[in-house]
Image (tube, rainbow, N blue to C red; front, side):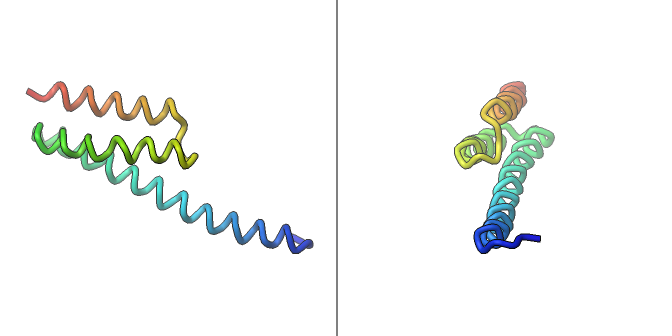
Amino acid sequence: MANTPQAKKRIRRNDRRAEINGNRVNRIRTFIKKVESAIAAGNKSEAETALASAQPELFRGVSKGVLHKNTASRKFSRLAKGVAALA
């Protein structure tokens, strides 16, 4: 258990940040799922618009520190490859 006031404050702050970061990751996952579902449905125009909205969300996660840069790039690359494969 935290004894000093600063340690208690850090616990409160860490709890708040964990909730915010968790929400951010969930939001990113939702955007990715939208692209994947459009690809699975074979709807190219919907997939392209979903990909265009997912890209800034992915890289916002990088700038906020919830995703590694390479992870976001890999996810975006694979999604873009899936969209491009749609005829």
